[in-house]
Image (cartoon, rainbow over all chains, first blue to last red; front, side, top):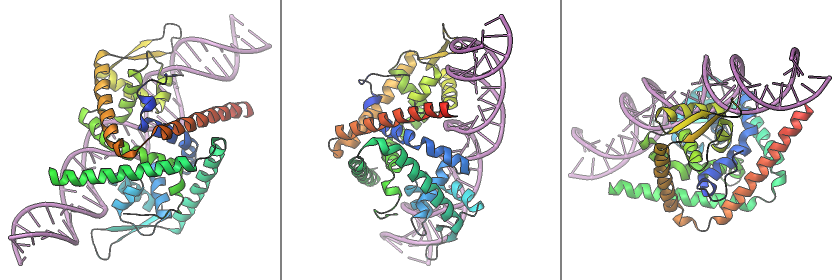
Length: 158
Length: 158
DNA sequence: TGACATTAGATTCTTATGAATCTAATGTCA
DNA sequence: TGACATTAGATTCATAAGAATCTAATGTCA
């Protein structure tokens, strides 16, 4: 094992810590996904659709934490498997409104249940997490708000 | 925007929150990496090597949060660019001991500086984070310890 | 209205990813 | 010592990822 001291750059680098926690926590669930033949991006799309109504692709991509082309690809695969459907937007004909099918809902429910079970199992020893979760939520809100501001400013500036 | 209520599954799902925070935080830095023609896995490898001595590939993969084959591929690319070197282990001849070259060190330093600057910029509005960081570290330690235990037990059990 | 900008999403295409597997070296225990 | 297990890492290969670009629809403002 590389047991780096507590003085290095990575040890205090927030993205590294976030990713590491995510990875450790998600590893067993990724095995589940493989078992079901569901790619990670597909899972994220399904999970979002399972708790939202019809959504456009861009919004879906944002919520699923994936780039738009990745989501478009994932949607094609999911549509081929009969797990989602796309229809044209009635008002804006550029839009494809995506929604989940009953089969998709069922699969999402199964996967979500597995995710919950695994998380519970893993977090059993981890003590109280509500606070951590809230801090993460706050952090993300702040970051996203700032990023949006910055983007808007950049638009106007240059 | 998909403004899901606060009641959904994803909103309380820790991996989702972790990934989302990571993504928001890392986005600007990924643009930097693209500018330097460095893949994300390559950056992670470089960052680890920059603060460790000679390391074996498996340890490196663990520290770099990537699967071993991904790291092997990244190492080939990095070696082609003269940023890392591999030599055979003196004791265990299966090992390839990886270390960073002066050019690699220089690139890593540049990238690390950019990462620090961007992080500081973004976190300026985010208030005190020491506590969040410590909670993340604790969480990860606990999770990794538990996972290791579980793996060991599974080995013995079958 | 017509020119230009913006936006939604699909497509293209190169590259990274990573599961599965393989080889070779080292441990282990009879 | 020899058989078998384990470990380090490389390789193979099918697939996902995502940057760049493109098309088509909608906004905007003269």
